[in-house]
Image (cartoon, rainbow, N blue to C red; front, side, top):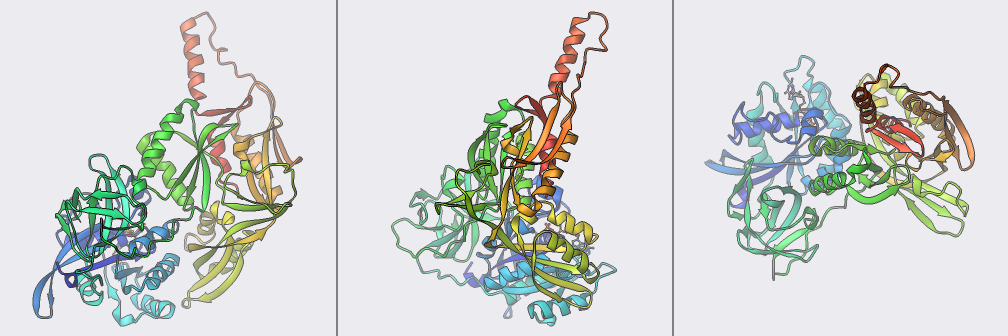
Length: 602
Ligand code: GTP
């Protein structure tokens, strides 16, 4: 395939506007997957993705399509690069777009432009992609394509006459999609007679084949058996297998200029496969391609085995999982309350949730996660600065005075029906937000931009926003600068002992309320034990909230009159079982749910 017969494109959309369904229809239309066979939503592979209806990892598929081009029937090779549909993964979106020359911007014909439509539009626009607007779900009774066309014009200056009207459900209008891709999106611009340059798009570990890299051949060509080197690591490899995703791995022996495909090259771990790296023929000299901005970890949390003896199992599970998700950072840490564990950095809260869920579902690991924290910076009287990813590492009574602290902020885009403007403004100001922009998309929808401290949106912001707007708000954010803030460390003490894994960092003005809520939550979840338990929240040595769980003796043997020893033992063992999901901190048993509940206090 000469590159003028190749098109590389992706589909971008707000969550639920029909991106995956449309992708499936295109794969069916081209015979890449059989109609009605296989898994619905081919591109959403992971179990969590299907459960939550979100795409987490970008998948790519190649399809072939005959099209009458300049008077002759010509077969085109079309690479569809899938993009994740959630705010946490905008890094993966820009990564996928790097291999494309165009994008289908899918907008729901009833809901119209939403926050992620805006965010994704700008990512594609800044990558200089040709954008084809697709107004989808026109079969819905509430569909109003003309209103959406007007929105596309006023928000993005897109020509309404260029919008395609489709229903990925009934199939209406789908026949125009691929011809538009072929006619409007330019072919990949690389040079076939230049030395090979490949962009490493993604990598994952396959049990049988080892590390599989997704690549885009920018210049030149790659053949099986050739030697390649990485510009990033300097390592060299032999190409053992090369091919396309059609949609399963299909060996072709060669990848030509402009093609997107996979290679297997004997890499031992995905750590060697740096996303954004340039691969080239060993012994040739090439200018590396512009890489990607590295993923920024916005949320950190400690992960500990729920049962102390499972540390090795958790270690193994985390290693396996990070093999396929290099965007999670992992360092070992230890907590006096929870023992040995890991500090993990995530792209956002959903990313953290998904990781957590995959650990449990795919690896059967039981984990306790500590309150998520964002990365803070503290400055001390001697001028030294410290980056804090774990509140426990911030001394409660520092030897030196803290002279300044900074917290990360985000620029948030919120789109809502106009009647909810008042309550959203209230929510954002409670969350210490600063309004930057307030306008209207059309007569029914308002558009707002806020600067918000990241900490304030990490915990439950999106749920709250959804609930005060009856589910109508859409929300997206990008990371912004650090801002000076007045932060304090909030300790939780059980019977006078601080529990390091429960410490949090909060704004001084919120400390009282958060402290109160935390001790109340904990009181509900800590069962009565054989002694009285005091639960306190404190800033330094000052206690700001306190609750008590009174003592009780739970006599499980009370029912066992008579002297049946085996029965007694059984009961005692049952009680021990019940304790498995507990953590003993000092002398207090804390159930796993108590830790989970702490995550919900903002
Ligand atoms: P993410 O994977 O989370 O990014 O969502 P998505 O944009 O891929 O949306 P998806 O394809 O999963 O579709 C969301 C829902 O809309 C599903 O229940 C689809 O069945 C439905 N849907 C998709 N296209 C159409 C359409 O043209 N008409 C109607 N009525 N429903 C559609």
